[in-house]
Amino acid sequence: MRRAFLAITGLAAGTTALVALKGAPAATQAAPDRPVAAAPVVPGGPAGAGPTPAAGATSAAPGRSVRPSPKATATRGAGSGGGTRTKPATAAPKPTTAAPRPATRTVTGPTVSYRYGSLQVRITLSGSRIVDATALGLPVGGQSGLRSDDVQARYSGTSGEVVATQSADLSTVSGATYTSDAYQQSLQAAIDRA
Image 1: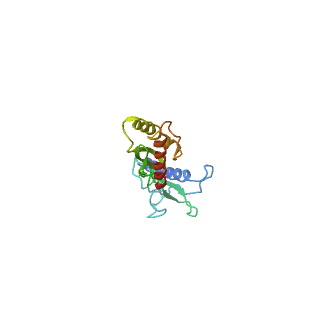
Image 2: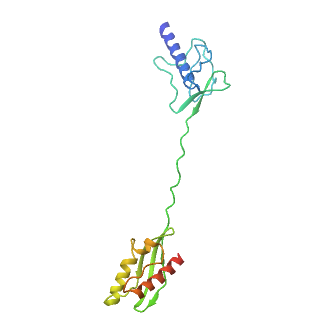
């Protein structure tokens, strides 16, 4: 019985010393003189609170060791007379919002009449960047339809010349000068509206 009592007391004192030394700022710094039978520090509780056990008394149950909480760090208090105190671990702040995505919007230019009919250009923007363009109301069929198809193929779409240049300064499609000019006029007005 006496051996068990001494073993438990030694275990409690050793654990207390280990916690105090582990929280010290330098590993080479010696611990101050303390009584061997000091009560173990309970994480989360204030230092020196509650009754102090008499010499030889312990609060640990047989077969159990006193360990600091994994969420708390034991540190030496500057003027605490050799006692320890616990500091709760802080969690990193979480980001609250994601970066805003640019709004996608569509702007349509005015209808421009020209020698072979009329057309208007509609552009789609993401933020201030043109991401798509298309001509509406182009003539269909005959020579005018073929010229319109050439203009649409070169200027419009997500990989067309409008998206590449981000302006109405486009090269004229050979054989479709009137349609090219009308497209550029409506496009410039749509860009101005955006």
